[in-house]
Length: 229
Ligand SMILES: NC(=O)c1ccc[n+]([C@@H]2O[C@H](COP(=O)([O-])OP(=O)(O)OC[C@H]3O[C@@H](n4cnc5c(N)ncnc54)[C@H](OP(=O)(O)O)[C@@H]3O)[C@@H](O)[C@H]2O)c1
Image (cartoon, rainbow, N blue to C red; front, side, top):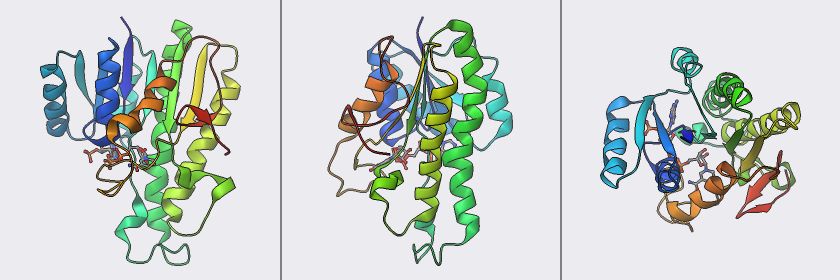
């Protein structure tokens, strides 16, 4: 039995990651903050013959996250759930986005994955195997950092730092931790003009979630190639 946990599996890239891991014969735990939406996604993927089970998981809920510690096995964790908090504000300049929206970005995009890793890594250590994929963004790259959307950018740059911290602490334990930029993908977040389909957006995420032993650790990837932080 090989188990994957994907946060934000109800739609967009997360839903497609659940599908692609299911096709690779993973038992997929589809994380959903809203159980009804999660059930619908589960039903669609089960209808395709995949082993998918919805799991109530709001990444801002300590109660939901604490329950993860009871899972028996988790081979791959995909921290996919995220929000674009600055979008709710008419002016996305760092001079005008209120700190409360930036804080909300950190809660969902950074502290959610942080707390989830604290529950899941001990399970992976017990198994002596784990793959963690933090779904980040090109907007997090310090090398390419531009203005606007501070809530999203700061939270994802911090998520990248989490990748570095955990990959270092877990070095040599066969738990590989990497960040990924899925590219500009047609989803509710990416919008209809985006370049990539969800199938294409999910590809590098699934590759990192299924890396062979000795694969890359502590990197930032796009289209299966390492990119600058
Ligand atoms: N699309 C792009 O072009 C693009 C580019 C770069 C990076 N990314 C990254 O790729 C990932 C997936 O993005 P997407 O485009 O698929 O986004 P999306 O279509 O907006 O979907 C976001 C997912 O996150 C879930 N979510 C939001 N807040 C949550 C919470 N508190 N707890 C649990 N789940 C929560 C949503 O659940 P509900 O259905 O319940 O709302 C939904 O399943 C994100 O990390 C995003 O930052 C996307």
